Image (cartoon, rainbow, N blue to C red):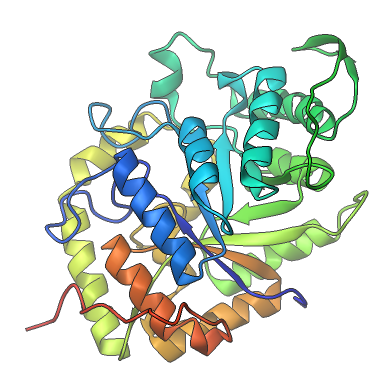
Length: 363
């Protein structure tokens, strides 16, 4: 049973829209200016967190724009004052000593609001085109486990000597240390057995991909039964939201976005071909029709304002603390959610929030 407050986050638009790439109401925009505007508005609206996903090239269409996660996160840290900033990282792309130094720098810029999201990669293309090893699934997790064990000690302020399969580090310490807490928070994604073992040993929060409540509850139960040192693990959920005044309006808009997303079929096929078929996320999201990434609408947050709030409360009761949400069109839907659903969750939106006009009205 969850005891913490419900926290609501939003995915930064680092590689464009989440549901359909050819939506007239949401032109493709992965620019720094757009990401800055979205995150600043999310903070002003009362959102608690933002996730900055990491890709070096766009995972949908390699020629499209892609925001760089860590320089973007540093800039957001300097511009914001309250919202948590979570930057994803794929261990093979950055040496743990360098990454730990970057994490401490952004932690101190943000005055204690920064977090690392450890992901172990699914997109072959950005690795192989750069001549970087894209190892087998379990080998990537073994590498990530050793990598995060070094990062965690360094960001905690320890002096590290490490002799492992992948890294040889001698008498290394970073300064300045974290000026605001013991270390930045560590989120971990992935649902395979190696991922679960890794988060139990090294994570603070497990990010679960969007899926039905019963499946999420089973995943949480499995992790809670595992031995763990330190504070209990907390849980986050990715989900795409469509909230409207009525369930019919929400379903109409879902069908509208589904039709738009169908135009991206060729793009999605290329993306699947470049993906590791052993990644459990891809197996999970293939179970049912949905729109949005990382499970998207499979979590069931499509309905009236009351229905969406009730379903979020049900997930919270099962143990989800942080809901990392996707919307399309992003800014307008983000405002409407804050105005209409925040109060139904007992959260206070900014006093100036007004719901936006619906992006789509069925005729």
